[in-house]
Image (tube, rainbow, N blue to C red; front, side, top):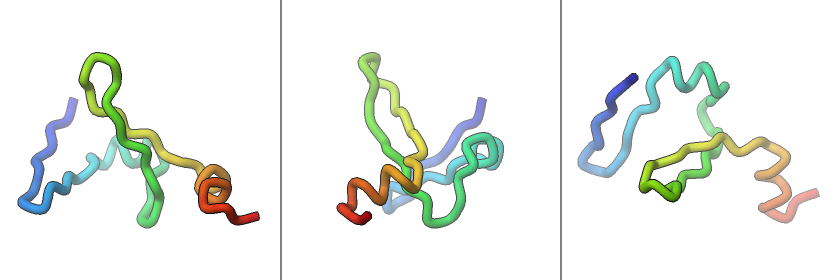
Length: 57
């Protein structure tokens, strides 16, 4: 388990092992929400879902 610190501008660094496991790269988008138990959940949004949401072909 990793621990992260919230910066003054409310940013956190995603630990390397998590970035690698999810294939997160610079410029990727993540969906962030609270689950029903109040936990923070982050999901990588695929390029095709980003494109569809932006209204692009």
